Length: 513
Ligand code: CLF
Ligand code: SF4
Image (cartoon, rainbow, N blue to C red; front, side, top):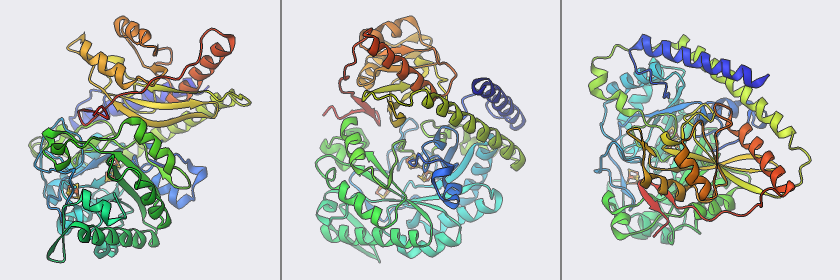
């Protein structure tokens, strides 16, 4: 029976994790630590091989596998109005921000330390804090050293694309199989609102001329990469009133050039970030605006909806950041032994867990077969990874949101919230922000919840559910939906659309401008 197998796998994973932590002298707190929703049967085998354990290229994989970034690339060759790399705060989570810059040699030591402590870390990305291709020596040296020292780790690069066509051959030579290009426009008129300048071929360009060059270089680089079979993801920052409508055209253009995945992310903007947009009061999109645009673009190309807008030195599962466990100071005294056999053993158990999860979901879905209902509900889930409902309501820093209907459960995003439980006590202010953030959800599925928040959630029309504690998310969401439908059909409850949510992003209530 799937549930029994799964619990035993979880125990084995925990045991193995504890052994690893003990052996390496690392924390054993237990807090271990897309895009494409496709499974192994839906993609050509060579593509599946590339995405199956990449937490950004596969939505399903992001519950199980972690990534890390090394901040070896400080310089940038252009300026975006949403970026200020001088800002440095360990609690800040957005691209461009780091606490420590590393040399390639320091970066490799960090990669080996993380790979040993977090065996499900499968991808090394270089994403800044500037542009990796504006720092080509440091970037490619790091990739070269990591490929030698830890050949099982996938290499990933994220660039603004300005220098990309010049480095496509080098990217291929170093077996960098995943490249992200940030493309916010294909129309220089729009670009002039986002980019004040670029520095290209020893010359500074401004205005529309700058954006024209940038766009041509981005699209050329994308085409060159996809022609060589390198998987490309396009990131776009949604900036209301500037490029929000235009991103539909961007989507078409990148799809036509072979991009595998499109990740439309909300602008993170606050005056304290010191960015042009932040200081100008430019707002980010609401969750509804973002979802509507993502839905509009969803067609033949997969849309990524699980991006966490990581720091350039992020470590761990998407949504968690363990970078403070691997600072230069801590690495200085740490003995690191790269143990490939233990990594493989751990990942084998993860794969068994994934199979069990898929089977459990299938079984639950079969029970829905033939259901004609058009109803859709949103459920929020508290999880700390592994695809299970395994987080206490009061300890959740974010909730994952699933849209559930007769066709199944679909991940549609996450909502960051303030911790409700602080120092053992419930924080009333935090609860009100959580209620706002989950305002469009019908239920919240948690491992545990106290009496007070339970009552307040109920009063706000959100069903607090702890009966699926420890179980798989999608299986449980579908099971909850079945019960919900049955109650509606029996007339015990009335289905009603929920109100809008106010979503925190980057420490702001985005969309409440
Ligand atoms: Fe890093 Fe980017 Fe590679 Fe992922 S992140 S370089 S593709 S390994 Fe991922 Fe982070 Fe979103 Fe980037 S969640 S910001 S999409
Ligand atoms: Fe910042 Fe990246 Fe833009 Fe450079 S390309 S200014 S690092 S966001």
